Image: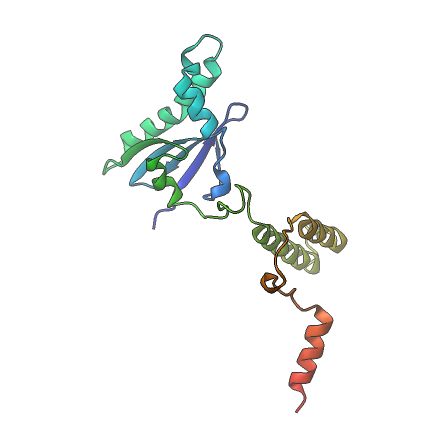
Length: 191
């Protein structure tokens, strides 16, 4: 299987590879997706509006013209070297052709999360980072992070997650603490 690549182009930064994730879609970015069979240039909302307004053709906006040309040049290089020739798509955020990009991305953001990664995803990422850091600490690695810092990261991720007012019936119970799970295990293990 061929791994797709996603490159991001912005005004202030050079082109960089980004994650195949919906958090990579930003209004001030241009994305270049290469899936081998499709080459897609995706313009964020702001960039698309500037392009439609013709700013890149006006004097003083040469940097915007260069930004719009950079992914086209890279896509042309990819098209010349590829057989069979991939489908070449240029689209804007919210357009019908954007489905080619959205179908390849991890949907970590939704219409409910407002374009931000969901709090549960943020917490899951912090938990994974904490677990890896604790494992590195146990193995006396040079890259180890003190447990107090990893615990602080986990607390800040929990406190930064937005809370909403929900009815009592829809509130999920919190996971059991370590002490309650150990007492549960003791009860289960006794004959």
